[in-house]
Length: 323
Image (cartoon, rainbow, N blue to C red; front, side, top):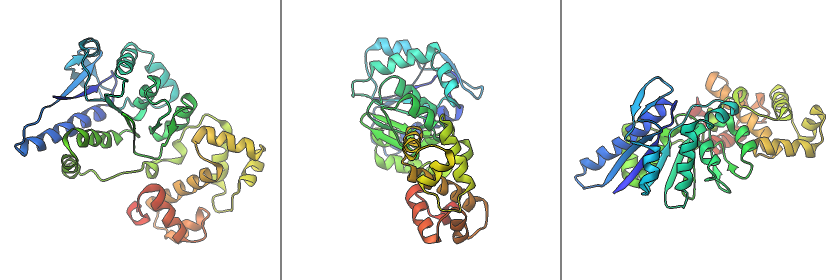
């Protein structure tokens, strides 16, 4: 018997919890249609028997955290839907509550490598707090990337990725990337063919990157120098920008600027500048009728060819697909 355990904290995003259950059940439905026997069960667990979601719905949990811990048996998968926490202070306050601390202990008790564990959005912070991501690669919701790096410098964060698997842990990006995570669980427990059927019937496109969904003005950075760098770049997108020019404008040394940008974003300065250009380019492509050549000129590229290649590489989509 394979067991997929869904840990539902109070205040969990209703959509994140529901899409996990719906996707897994869709997979079981496709398995049943083949006539082949399967032994897979889905168990939802909460700190209390009735879990309240952030959307005001209530779920009756199949089991309690303490019952799972006391049973001594380990599931094949633990999945933690997103909590919908929007900033570092909210995460700190939420994870200090009893259900979160008990979930943390439960996760730590499962951390021998035999259990695959997945989380999306701000719930990835819980995996990191439990020590499960130490020395590993991960992703999380893009606007909290800076806060994540500040808390967990020993974890390699790849926030442009939609899903990252490293060892027994799989992490996913913002909000509805929980759907992408659920498909990973379906593929692992029910087969890649069933996962493909789920994605087709549920109209889920392959989304390797969440970079194209990032909103530059909503990315939260802790370091004021990095915030100032973003603003200066955004005001001078059409002009050539070097690290020396940027550091001079901010009255810091190139070395200090490089160190602060790397600490906040995980990027070297040149890549950081390019990221700002591409985010604005994608916004213009999606919201205006400007030609690619005109967009390229506005964000500092000499021609549309280079911009097309960069967009395809960074966002996993062509400019025409974005538009």
